[in-house]
Image (cartoon, rainbow, N blue to C red; front, top):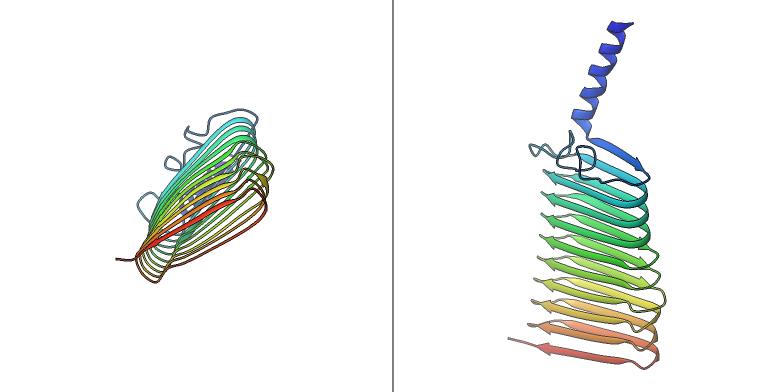
Length: 250
């Protein structure tokens, strides 16, 4: 029996080292220990071997989860349910994806992605949601969905051929600060069923497109595009809106 247990342990360790790791936590806790930090566990992109996958699943309150990966075709996923949650993902390399989903209150997301052909998905539900996202590289995509009230998104995307989609809904005080630098980038923003929504768009480079749609009450949109061949479209419906578009060509 002892020999069988040793053999099973060795096989389990080999599987973890080869394919990444999955971590689940319940109730309160801090994800920055050996189990919660993506840069600490086995198979989390150390050495840049590619095709690594890291998953963290937490339920309860006072969550803190972090994943760091370096390589190609990286996959990172964080799912949190509860209150006072923070999720951080940092990836370096071509291809791959990162997904963060939070439900509950006082949620915070930080994502930093560098490399081509990367995709990011952030979903936050309930109140006091904040997302801070940075992406560097070509042909990448970012999709952010925030639902309920007091949602805030800050996105900085740089490179060529990138796409950014932001959807905010819920009553009360939604705001987004969005910046793209490069060429052939597309931004699609929708805020609906809200009171006092604000969107600030800044695009720098040629042949970029920005589309903003708002429904509800007391919205504000500001779009700034710098360089040639850019397109900006704003649609508002409801009560008490303010929209401005500033385009300049060099």
